[in-house]
Image (cartoon, rainbow, N blue to C red; front, side, top):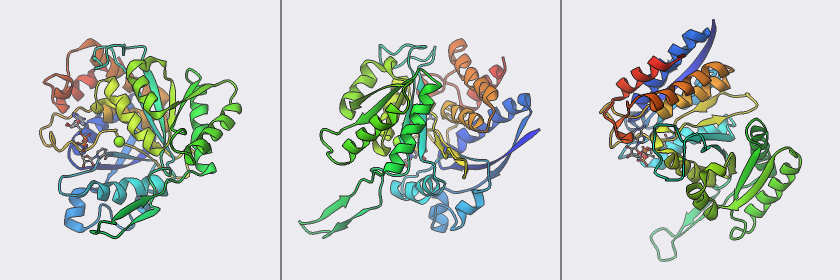
Length: 353
Ligand code: NAI
Ligand code: MG
């Protein structure tokens, strides 16, 4: 029996509802493949912030450094500013554990109607590769003259040769195992220092991967193409901010944010990688047991892939596709009446079938 130690951080709101659902699927598929999981649960969250003053303890990162992976639900709660939950937990983990690749796959499933008329099942299937530790999400800058008419804010974007090169190489290598096509998101017509540098590095790395076709699009035109022609894409690579925005748009094209998975990967495996659905804590529906668990379950499949269990991962993904194609069991965000629990039960029926 292969056992993996997983650090579980359900977080806030529906994070606590979808993580148990995903763990039930992990346990079921694991049992079929000789894999077991031992979960260590951590209460890091906005709720902890409100009672103890911090999202996680000072030695938080050391407590999970030795785990095989981190599986996180979502953090965020009304009354706690969103930058506290982001900078107090997610960003320190991503940066200290060098999770410089944020991987966000998406596809249009049979049985799940896309709001985009031309987005058909079997045709739309691509992955956004987002740079995850530098770029526009930088701490360099500041504010001056608060409260005066001269009040100002400056925030510097940081693009390094090492940082851009490694995420581009990841994208080109990934494309080789897929349809062999990379699209780079840019805006080098308007942003005249960082993004021309990004474009140069894309050309440089692209030349080293002659078996991969690549092109680039300005971010505004690219957004339009996500909606008008989503089937054309295979691997889309972008900076921290562009990748973040594009992946929510991609999730919407596929039918909703509740189904979208994400992985924060440290490719060198010097540190644990972190797996979290794209969606947030959804305070508007939290506590009612109706959250869609697909995003978290698909995220669990990405974790299985990362841990070396590709067959088990494929089974989980196939079970999601099967419930959507063969039943009308849906949570309310997808127009149904199922609960998180009853949807998960339906999923479990299809695991391995
Ligand atoms: P959100 O993703 O939590 O919710 C957006 C909308 O989608 C809501 O109407 C929600 O009900 C719906 N939704 C999201 N996931 C769903 C699911 N699995 N099933 C059914 N419906 C679902 O984004 P929002 O409202 O912008 O943020 C809420 C809180 O979550 C904020 O505090 C925000 O900072 C935090 N957040 C945390 C993230 C994380 O932990 N990685 C990511 C995004 C937001
Ligand atoms: Mg986002």
